[in-house]
Amino acid sequence: MTSAPTLRSGPATRGLRGPAARGLVAGWAGLAVAELSARLIGSQVTPLEAVGAWVVELSPGGLVRGSIELLGAWDKPVLVVGMVVVLSALYAGLGYVAERAPLLGAAGFVVLAGVGAVAVLTRPDTSPAAGLSLLLGLGANALSWAWTGRRDLEPEEGPGATRRVLLVAAGAAVLGVSSRVVGRQRELVERAREVLRLPATRPAPPAAAQVAALEGVTPWQTPNADFYRIDTVLTPPALDPDQWQLRVHGMVEREVVLDLADLLERQVTEAWITLSCVSNPVGGDLVGTAWWSGVRVADLLAEAGVAAEADAILQTSADGWTCATPLSAVTDDRDALLAVAMNGEPLPVEHGFPVRMVVPGLYGFVSATKWIVDIEVTRFADVTAYWTKRGWSEQAPVRLASRVDLPRAGATVTRDEAGAVSIAGCAWHQHTGVSAVEYSIDAGPWQAARLGETPSADTWVQWSARATLEPGEHTVRVRAVSADGEVQTGEQRAVAPDGATGWDEHRFTVSES
Image (cartoon, rainbow, N blue to C red; front, side):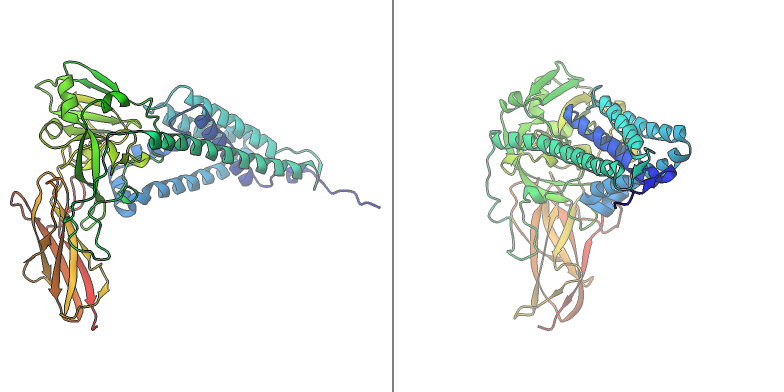
């Protein structure tokens, strides 16, 4: 005889038991559908990305600055994890609310969708169709909530169990397809990068630039994969190079609009240029040197005809980020470039593909716009850029800086037969140049280091020395002297509002043998 199946009724008859679980499933199902549909309709940004950017936009400048200083390139992954945790808590909480007050719970889900709608629809790179993804997500949210809460009298192993399996499978399918769509869009752009033919060369670094073949010394040329990345986007815009356009307007005699082919018809300039981030602490690694290829901004502005009263250009990225750059810095003799290639290759997506701005001698927050789409010739008095409104300086020339690479802080090193150890590092003061680097052992007198060669004043310089030391603990500090005679200050200052100052110092131990 076959025993009768156990029936469930009342509150226990939910396909997923517990209001928190139902809220989580409904919330994430809705968000997954919204993310997927946003990609399918060709939106440049998804709801989750838009909300993340909005969080950054609304955060106090000190909080954003602190996260960059503390986390560096990990600030975006940490933000995403934080958003997942917060959303999960909200979804679970709304599940409890909806269980007891259905209308109030439904209103909560609608409010969350409304936040996403505001974040998406107020972005400069959005379209009205992007709002459709949020409506679809809200519909999926409601269906998931209803499906997981059916109160049918069902056998324990009957349709309810099947429904749970189907729901999990559907969720996995949506996430899988969404990942594939995102990956496909990035894949298409990467494929376009691979076939793009640019008038760019790939020279070797200057032979005498690397002063010492020592393990741990930073390479003079920074590979693309190792180049620092600091920006405000969760996901770099995947821009189709065939659709890219740049508009030059404002205080000009004639507006210029050009696509990538138009840009590449102009004379291409190539140069070694060191970029450094204003958020780089003393001794930090948010600095790198690459071979950049592009069109001089000065030539393009000359075509437009700049008004005599203008003193700035306002640059805008595809994601809406802005920076104001001194007009003099992009029209003087320096190689301020609309760069299309980095180290002989099309720009990586993370570094601004298809076109970005590179200006020697200025910190990136006032010059280095990635994914650039707009240049407005204007006056500083008439504009307020992204970081300026958050308390950072309006104009920010790079500060004279230096760093110790060897010995590493806290390292134990061995003397050679002569009782000496290797000391090495780098120094930079772009568009001014470094004329000397000095080091001090155990707060003793400053001694001159040996310098590598540099192709121009727009790159960093490597330095090295040999110091005869007794076994035990020691310190080494470094300072640079610029080509115009400035001696690097030892005054310790934080990175805000216009760059850190101070001497980099390492404590290390010399072993007996």
